[in-house]
Length: 242
Image (tube, rainbow, N blue to C red; front, side):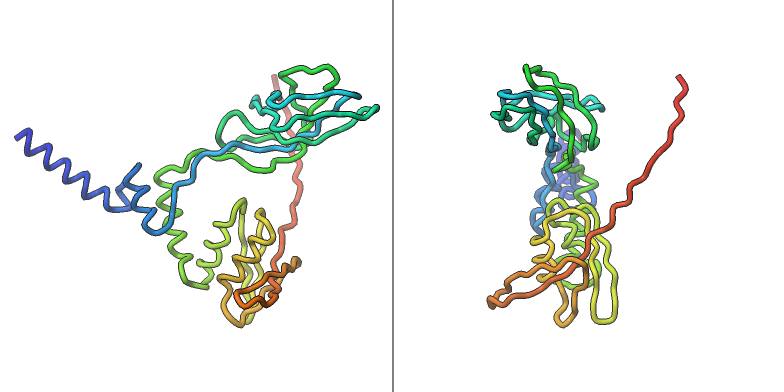
């Protein structure tokens, strides 16, 4: 009976590994790869930091800072002030840890590797937001979304194709009779325009505030339009009792 149970359990696991809804781990990766969907790996957050340096000051590569949230970042390229006056130099810093680490704009980071003449490190912006390794549930959902993007110019297909563009955070599509407007946050203009051209229905006009010119397969210039969202700054008033 023990041997029969082992055979039955092996067959049971094999059967469920062939179904996207029940497969997990490497089996799910293999299933999703059949339709061109691959698990997103973890990546680190990349930020732009403004360094305040006194004259003739050099900050070596891999020097580290700590943000207000307690996360550590390291310098990717040496920063050197060869001028005779105090100078601000912008450099990229990479997070030590993987995941969606927040680095607040216009905040001052703590210098963990003190250098004579390096007086301040101010966070300017987040260039690339980090992420954790995609879970099985997230991979299953993304597989379904990407399958909708195959060979179609419907609303769902265009939305899915645009969400696959690198660094795109959000997409909103406004439809009209013979045109549509895409409002998209994140991503490079050229990548967005190319994706819109590839999935745009023939004879349908694209609208928007940004116009990009691309070259099609016949070497003709095509103008693709889309818009960027207006960022609304919010303030929060908090009363702390300690």
